[in-house]
Image 1 (cartoon, rainbow, N blue to C red):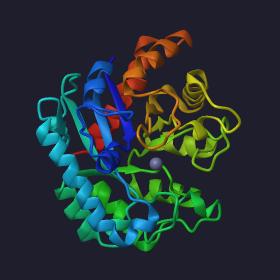
Image 2: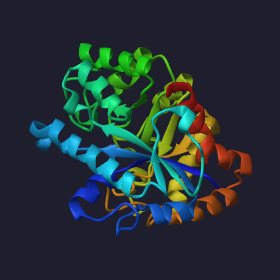
Image 3: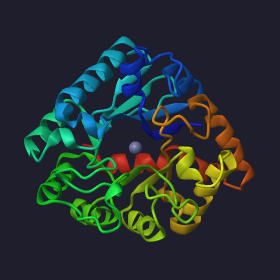
Image 4: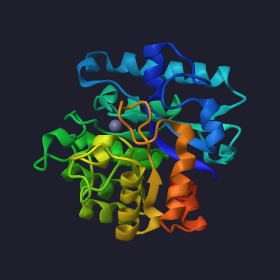
Length: 307
Ligand SMILES: [Zn+2]
């Protein structure tokens, strides 16, 4: 089955380990992605907060690594820049560049536009911390929402055809960003708070608001976001898929593994996606519903937003 995955941290890992995108020891490489049937992967650019004084430099280095890898492996991967270029093909992965935490933009719309020209097509305003655009989940439920610059940034993203990711943002900012964006949003990697009470997960009201926007949530495999009281197995992850599908409809459910973003994830790597397909079948999902979760829900959103 064709698969779209909304979040991996593989680019940062490659810079650390000096391994390559085609084959490596991490959770994700092109060789295994091909076997699993991946047609589109979001590649995250990310720096920890203590590296923010170097934010622009670090992010540019990651963008460079992204294109170096893609050019070397152009037979198996291409950058997804415009929707007309999207050809779901298990033998040639579409790679979409995503920014996780927009510290490198400061408050400058011009930087956002430059990043667009460098191929950036998806932005999450914050990681867990507060920045000049919005507050991350670390600020708790009394967060201050979006700054003026954050609002401007979100409106500009919509105009330019960039996807908005609301993983990691604190609750007030979550609602405000959806209202400012006026389009379907993504939560690329999070789960249901009703099943796992972690601040990174969405409560039922947030999930309903996401659905109202027409957007999708990529359900996340990081063990701590799947279950707080045990080392979760695949079935615990699938329970999130079942829960969110029942609450807001299967048309809003997708996959956002977080491969290479955490040590403890439910599946051992991208090639194990086949196990997920089998288990969803056992849980009673039809072929058509699985196709929605695995790829067509995300395709609906990217066709609406990307130029
Ligand atoms: Zn993340």
